[in-house]
Length: 336
Image 1 (cartoon, helix red, strand yellow):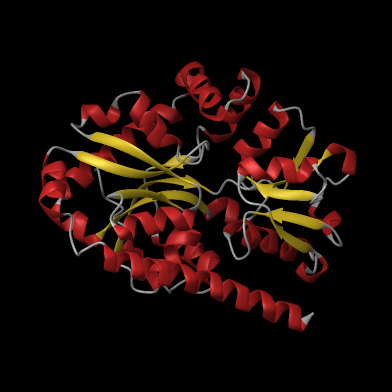
Image 2 (cartoon, rainbow, N blue to C red):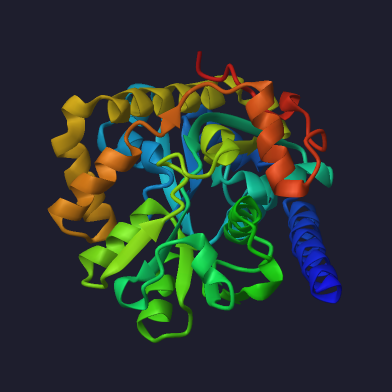
């Protein structure tokens, strides 16, 4: 078991190191600045935003587009969809985007390695849960000992979350076979085809699977408070820009944060449930009933403010040490 643990540590280190190397290479290709065309775009309020496609995780950005909050701030925001957190971080450092949707487990290691990144509000609370087919009889983390668990990729937040939950209930992680199955789109076929016994996903992926007719049950749900400290302090999403872009275009970045703040206020207001449910149904391709349940689960999960203690908890979750990246990496006042 000790050898298995060492292999996992090496895999985690290789994942972080690989991301860091990719970012360094891309930043070298970026040419050190946006150039004349980029300066003109910034002056016009044009932003290319790195974005998670087909997910409720960056819901404030989706709503800021649909409800016109970006336009109200004089911004022309174009979404550039990406398939993964590392891809979003690489696009930002490489200069393909000016701002990106990011998750702590992907961006904190990059900052720790010296990448000049500033993090921006708002913040989405940790949205992770386990899901298993009802026919399997698995309804508890303890039952996953000896089973195959689908995660996005080795060393990612999904695996870290699983390990934290195993520790919480006394399950030896070495007794579980971790299988990389990708994100929400590929989790469903992995379960349907029996490649894994359960998966770690988000509320939106769980409800999407149910909407598609896969009878799954959820347990150890972070948003429902089942994850202890991670339920209280864990973050799933925030936004990022480079220090250079923020220094050169502070008003544009501030307008961006303000637009997302307006979107969070809109999402937090349950009076907007009907429109929000319709947005989620269209975004994820799910039925209205599932979209309504998703709204109920996530519409209060976005906040516009955080603090040092919360930040330390996320740094510890991402890289092991709570002091590896200081709270000063976050511009908590952006948009205020």
